[in-house]
Image 1 (cartoon, one colour):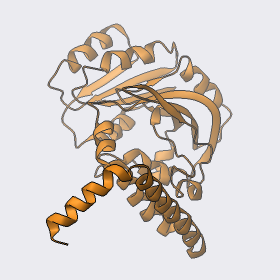
Image 2 (cartoon, helix red, strand yellow; image 1 turned 90 degrees about the vertical axis):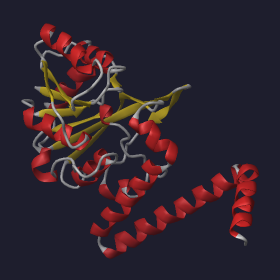
Image 3 (spheres, rainbow, N blue to C red; image 1 turned 180 degrees about the vertical axis):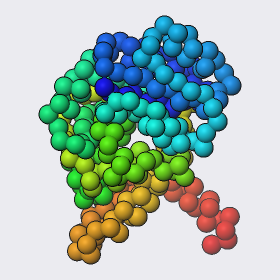
Length: 276
């Protein structure tokens, strides 16, 4: 069985399409676990309507400590040996779940199985996430050099992986999936399949959009990378650090050169206010 876990809070905008997306997979061996944090809008009403009609939907609604806590609750409820996290505003490509179940029949336990993910914004298709290199040292180079899996709609893993990699960090409310991946790739059997399985929406009104607009998301991932590369032997740590930091500097130089006309006046105004 495959257990799809969806954490949600005040998600009436997306919850129906999320539920329907899993139904449309027509996967006989799926359960869809909805962990609602006590929504104040119509989210729970919609969940109830669907749960009354479809027996594969299981749900609870109660306060929690954030998205990580909600996902951990879903993991505790899950009956499947395969887990997938589907955020309420994301969705699977057609017939993905049956295909995932078939692939897992050939995989050693615990495995992390990763595919590609479409990324969408308000203007339409933004790009394809193709995280083909999944080793720990690959991910520590950063997504500009080796793209890591951007969204859990495009990866699945054995539930037993949590026994060795741990659960999602309840103190992390934004980058919890990246934090888990950095731990998971160190202990799991890794398999990448060059197929598109998930769809990740970065649109206004979502937590991801707000985080990306402020630049906080990128800074959180950089902090995680710097924390986890401390686990490497010194020579590997040095190599990864030099490559990562050099790429970051080159990215900043490139950004400044492309936006100098708007950035220079702002910098001059800031220096003027400071009396420099």
